[in-house]
Image: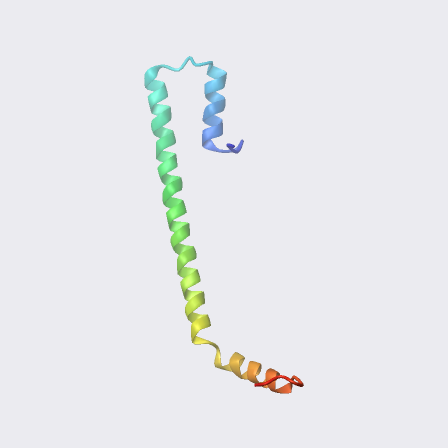
Length: 86
C-alpha cells in the first residue's frame, strides 16, 4: 500500500488525472524522477541501518564491559536478599 502523502502517490494521482495522456518522453522523465527518489530512499535506509548497527554495537560493548558500580550494587542487593546465594 502506498501512503497518500508520498511522491509516488502524488505521481500516481497525476497519472490518473491525465488519463494516460502523457507522452513517452514525459513518462520516461517521471520514471527517472521516481527512480532517483527510490535511490535516495535506499541510501537513507542504508544510513539509518548503519547508525542503528553502530548504536547496538556501542550498547553491546558497554554491557559486555559492565559497570563496576552497578555490579557492586547488584552484589550488595543479592547479599541482602534472605535465602539468596551470592
